[in-house]
Length: 431
Ligand SMILES: Nc1ncnc2c1ncn2[C@@H]1O[C@H](COP(=O)(O)OP(=O)(O)O)[C@@H](O)[C@H]1O
Ligand SMILES: [Mg+2]
Image (cartoon, rainbow, N blue to C red; front, side, top):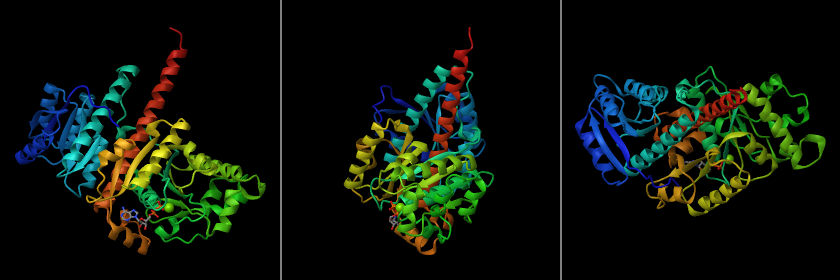
């Protein structure tokens, strides 16, 4: 629910094709809160206009003769940190997008964007920029702002994937997101995936892995668990991620939920999960946890440990209503709203509910994943996630986009933590 901006958002368009510039300008003319302050045909000209007009947001084409959009973005991020860049690219420029990300682009759109997409992205990025400037003023100008590519390595962050309603695509999102993060972070970093749908986990099915080793092996070893043991019960998947599967059947799950032999009920399960995540945080850069639609002590342990909760919702009233209730729970748990990333799954143009309506009922949307029955069915039947089968398919690209959102958010949180640590440090040093 972004508040109506008090000032008009100043936007600059940079694209070498006159027709594209004109189309974007026309689309933006429908939004009274947005003012197009100029249009440039190259990276160089774009930078000159940024210097002159200080726009809040630049819509930047990637491929341009002369200085390309990536170089221009890097310069703008360095010299004009108040200006946020949104990259526009055609399908399939994934590698460019990665570089644009490193250069500090805040968001991406695929050409041609719809008016809705364009305006909501501009608004979102504008809000991000405002927050960043406030932070910068608080921290003083010497502090460099978080640029995802430059951020220091992420270590031990838990990403919980949850939906208060079953069957909306939690597992689909969790599995593909873990692989997308591994792709983005590269083979030098470790991404783990935990199937915490303890009773009826199906990560194994999606990845074509038999649960010969699983969470069920954990409970008896809870007190002498170490990295080697963890390794011995996880699977290395071809995509590079390591996977900890759910127990093979509900009976075996029971031991996990009760914390083995300690017999003190759900709290036992919570302590098993707590100890597991603590150990995993030392061993992995990012741990994605696929959860079931049930809030118990185990779930609360995962939520507490999580840097980010990916809340998966499908565009229908019951799912939105459940998500609304979950947000109320999250409030009661005192989780800040930016701990939750709202993901709309199975997005379809014919769905009747518009993204803005969902945002109004809930919180701003972090990513939208299209309905793609064919891709999902093939993935499940072959046990090969769609992000592995075809990275260029829109459904895969939307997951890559979510992965970038996750990285950005983690990098920003990291920076904030660093800043507040530095401020505390300063406060302690007398005069
Ligand atoms: N984007 C999508 N497009 C089409 N079908 C999907 C999509 N995401 C999930 N599904 C299908 O929805 C069903 C539930 O997905 P799953 O990931 O198991 O959900 P959950 O973990 O929330 O129960 C599965 O049959 C899955 O193939
Ligand atoms: Mg599931």
